[in-house]
Image (tube, rainbow, N blue to C red; front, top):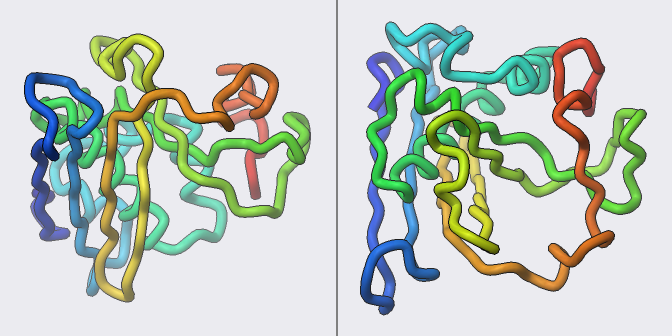
Length: 179
């Protein structure tokens, strides 16, 4: 839970047994009602450690606090899924950005909405499992953001060539992304 934002997290397993199976899930809620700045969502944690440079660019630029809260809820849900405590360092190793589609060009901002994609870095890299992927679903109300993270196998839309993946350099703050 963040100090100023309120919220919670839970996680568990569906009908599968054993660790890391396809039925494992994590969820998180981040409250943002009455808050004025993104820093209030993370309390004493440095905003620059919790959010990657690309996430800060994506959430800034005229966006509301709802965008920051949704991204934070997604990060917490992923950490809950992985069974990892939400420290600033670990939150910063979970990057949540829109997933480009085949219709998007990697060199220009796209005005279509895109599902969130999760990228694990640092010590968390590789914890999404071989051949698998962590998927996140986000929802918002006027006061809270909710995220659910699932570990899933490959889907048809994950096939080679069906989705455009931006290289890491395209996620840097120097490139205007989805503004």
